[in-house]
Image (tube, rainbow over all chains, first blue to last red):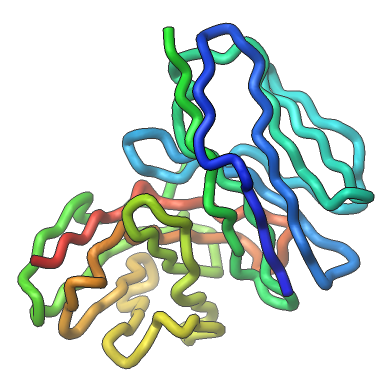
Length: 114
Length: 115
C-alpha cells in the first residue's frame, strides 16, 4: 500500500540554522513521483517540488535542497540558513497506486525563531 | 501567475445546513480535486473529477457530498446536511493532466466551521 511517513512532528530551530525534514515512503509502483508542499500559517498549500523516481540526483533551489534515496525510500528536504518565513508545516506526498490522488504524510511543523 | 481560487475563505454554518464551497480552477486544467484537512491533521483526498464526472472518491465522500462543474469555470463541493465532524479546511486542486508528471495546484482553502 502507498504510505508516507514523516516521523518528525515538530522541529524548532534558530534562524540561520540548517534543518532537514525527513520523508519515508512505501509504494507498489515501479515508477512514481514524490512531492513536497508547504503550508504556511495562512493555511494554503504551496507546491515546492515534484521528483520522478527515475531521477535520483539531488536537487537544489536556492536555500532548499532535496535528497532522494530510492534505496532507503526516502525523500528528505533540507533548508539551509533557515529564516523566520520558513516557519510552516511541510508535507511530503505520493500518488496512490494506479490513481492520481495524493497521499499526504502527517506533516512536520517547522518553527524558526529569530 | 495562474492560481486556483476558492470562496469563501471561511464559512460558519449550523449543523444540518447545506453548504456549497466554490472553486475556480486554473483555466486550462482538466482534472479537479477536493481534499480536506481536519485541524492539525493531514490532508485527505475526497474526490477527483474529470470530463464532468467523478473519477474517484474516498470513503469520506458519502451521499452527503456532491461535486459539480456547473458552468465550465467553477467547481463546487456541496455538503447537504453538515455535521460537526465536517468542520475542516477544504482544499480544491487542479491539474493539467491526470498523470503524475504534472503537479496539482491547490487553492488557499475554505475553512468550514460547523456549529
